[in-house]
Length: 399
Image (cartoon, rainbow, N blue to C red; front, side):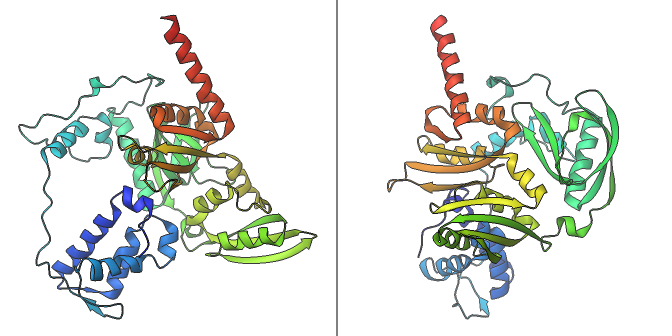
């Protein structure tokens, strides 16, 4: 039995998946093999695990190691000795944390009706306990009724896959009405603002919600633009030994490939992929795929532009004071991988990708972790970190 992947461990995904499966089995008098497969696959975080056979290991754990399900791999239906799902009980610390979170003005953006805090429970922390450095003071007006309405309209467009008609004022004061394809809503800790990332071709747009004067829902997004089944094709130029080509084939073995030799030690590789796989594809291409040659993305042009806007970052995390979990949760908005560097589980290599125009914000977020993080790539970010630390030391020495 292989070890659980790092992300599944850190996010306690194995426990949540097991609870979901056992709760279903308790309330339905068992669970069929197809439903079991669906529940487990829908819980897997890693896309490679979803495509592979890793979900079978969950069944092996539940049926063999822990004896929580009875059946075998050929069973039509599994049963559990557990008679009723265990109730979820909140601890005092969890209730205190909930009280603190409900005092955050941003919470109103996500709640149609306010939630009453438990009587007699003090919040775990207050907003005035935090001192923010490098944060702009002109954050979004989270309590403004108009802003709340526009925020919820944007969320509805994302959830229902609708076009969005936006009356927008840009940074130069120019106002225009545009129709966009919403892709994802992001929060900037540095700016204390929400921003909408669109899926408009050929170049996505970034729209600050505070600059929206009005917005309204439009028609449904044309299916080919967002459907997971929609197929795209990219083209790579592989130069070097045939072993370099073999490395590329191995890396993308979960996709359909076509290979053409176009010159001496040159190969054109075409890869078919789905829309939903684009972040994973770009993440792989931003890091070296082989030591035996060079791999370069040559098309299509919009994909090349999107890749050029991304920056790969690599860091070493020393797991003191639960640092690894804090890093992975803090950077949960970024596509990333993590791997152990030692047998004791004290040092980890974490790779992630960020947009080049977010570099200052990434710098601030990295510095907040202190000495438990050591950034090794990219050099520009390393230089910025060194310069920022040098200026802080000069300020400290001058006091």
